[in-house]
Image 1 (cartoon, rainbow, N blue to C red):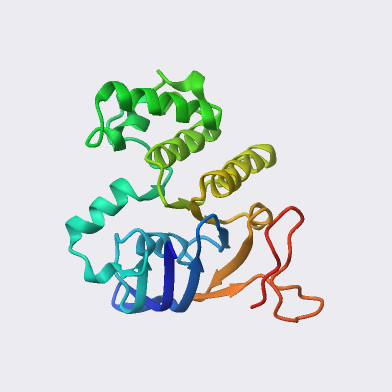
Image 2: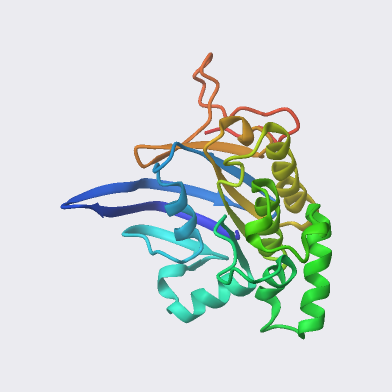
Length: 244
């Protein structure tokens, strides 16, 4: 399995108080799975992804990538995983404001191939997500939708086994949200990438193979409130129905 959480707990300090961010969270993603997690702002969604990426470590339980506990790996080894096998997509853009989007997307490849090859692959990925025309643009010149798609290209260009996507639908209209979610669904289906997406827009989760809510630190499957059967909703066009 590319990713598994086993009874994970994480706390953070808020002023003088210790606040539980995640409580007994268990989750598994296999090859080609597309899983969405909905939660309000500050519900712990970003922490969930940072743990999956090895940027933070669990206080209890384990987070495993390909069966290996990330807490058992040195910081440098976790960094190599993020460079080569785990794509983390956030909306903060390039560190240099002067990077073109082509250079930004090519950046993760520069330690693995020539600059020419990296730029060729970056251009192909920008085309794949539908923003080839933004290749020479700077981050500050892009719309919110273009920034989201360029960030997805930055995550996808390394051909990761696991793609972690932090709230890509925030600030987008319904059509743009659908475009982003369909790109993630295609990446899971065609490239076999395991995709974990968080969103503060509940409707954006309905095309995932499985959806969960995160609140008060607890991860719960999205269930049919009419039956309270504990069955994860089988969304139209989504994956197979799963039981909680």
